[in-house]
Length: 203
Image (cartoon, rainbow, N blue to C red; front, side, top):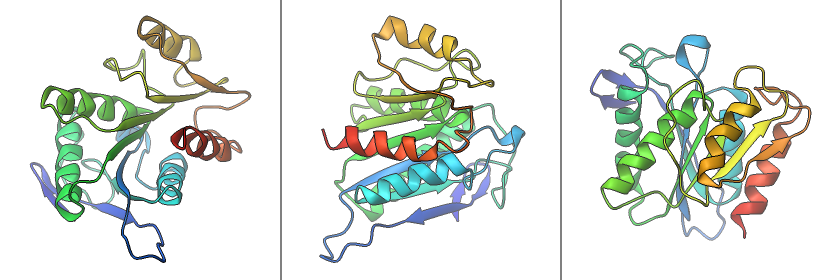
């Protein structure tokens, strides 16, 4: 539990099993889908992202946004959630100083992480890289992201149409990985998320 501006925040930490005892090689923060539509840190895509980054040797931290699970407070349309994610980042950097940071989000979580990256960039300390799955373009004001951002979307996403993501990505000349046949929640397609992120991270 962390103490945020709106009260207690429930978090989960997954650590890599490292036989060499050198500790994690990076920090990954994972943001879940919209709290008002059943989104929690236990969402399958959020858990897949956590497992993916543990496999890459990262300490993966997830958080239940305000009003979800044991987290106190009320939904704050992304503003307070971005503050809370920044708090989680500060906590993780205190535990694991000097490590590179990856910001990962699914759906509403992409909106939060893109705004956090914008804030970190203005502070002169941007995250190493972003992973955005089911980017909430067209639904919320997702700011531009760095050119090395990994963007993954389902071809048949009924919640956030692929065309909206293309409209957001096109002015940025940002590639989008499209998973054929995948819906918004990547039902039976979750392995593709892990495979693409791991493959692209090693480049």
